[in-house]
Length: 206
View 1 (cartoon, rainbow, N blue to C red):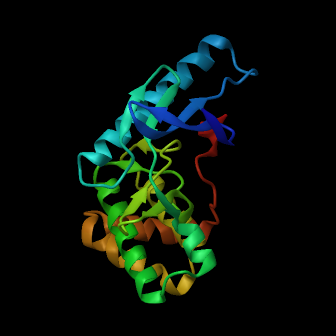
View 2: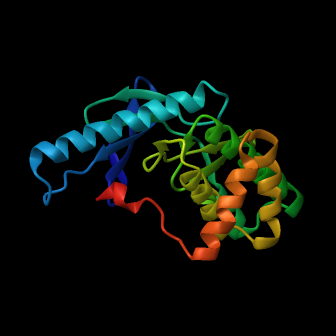
């Protein structure tokens, strides 16, 4: 395997498994935690991520397929594509196509939230466009299964901060077409902005 990234939570490798190109996420041991607690947390978060990916996939969302779940290791199929944030930064697509992709990203968010999945880092950096122009959601490492409107609104906030303000409405239009509680979540987004809470669930990595 070849290491391609390392964050606060895990080391990321690229490799081959069962004949597929894969991404391997190996959750890092935290030396400041008691071993028993550390092992339990890493196992719990690995299983949770795999469960959420399965839930998302079986409900029509474009997410990587899970090939293997170990105690603290997750192996998923590699998506052959380009990060949406790269496409945006390099301006390789027209504005009309960009608006369409943001509308679709909003629909995906609505479907996730109906399933009580909060992604936790829902931005173009965690989306990929493949060679068939299909939009995929990746990296569910910070995701949670929760009914909290607050956590769902934070997904919207992260997206709002990551894309041009003038285009956020396209995202919300897509969101409204799918999310049954869209009005509540969007209202909570406004509340969060008023009180200045720009905090995500980074505590999950500690």
